[in-house]
Image (cartoon, rainbow, N blue to C red; front, side, top):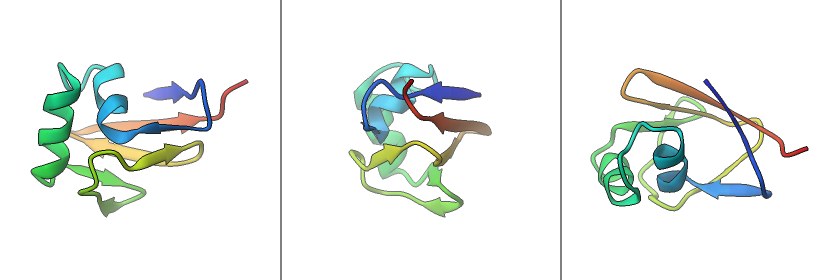
Length: 70
């Protein structure tokens, strides 16, 4: 799936919530802390990691390609 940024970046836990992988920001933080999330193919454990355009986030078998804002 694709996600278009509104700003320069989005925090990882919020991205998971906005695309529907996590039901809440808190659940997104739990997923990150549990080692369920990869950014650009590497495990990511920072719940509020800044995700920018061009990055790819993977979680629970879902792949999110982050696109720049218009």
